[in-house]
Length: 106
Image 1 (cartoon, rainbow, N blue to C red):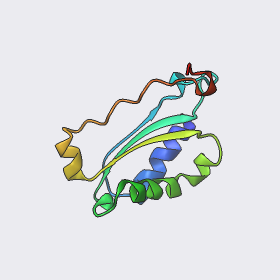
Image 2: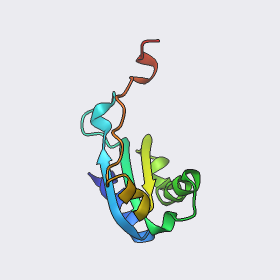
Image 3: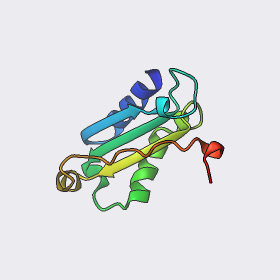
Image 4: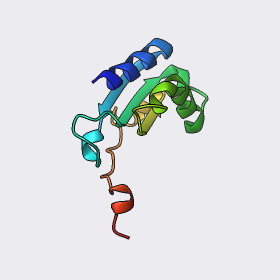
């Protein structure tokens, strides 16, 4: 849980957060047991006001650049302002099932 905790700590230190959920979804992918490679990150922050999704995601990528350069293969980002989060009834979308990369049937 080291990488998950590091992501949480970095986001909490740099953003004004109303809600944060970092979920390790590595077990849903074709990786070794106990991996920390795939994460679903839901962040609700007033810091996102006036920014489109790309700008919001860039903010997060910058904060966790070291993790993205190392153990983290994928981040599923769900970024909302407090008003947007309330409009969604405080629910982020479910992650899709992993298709296994090149192993997917076409």
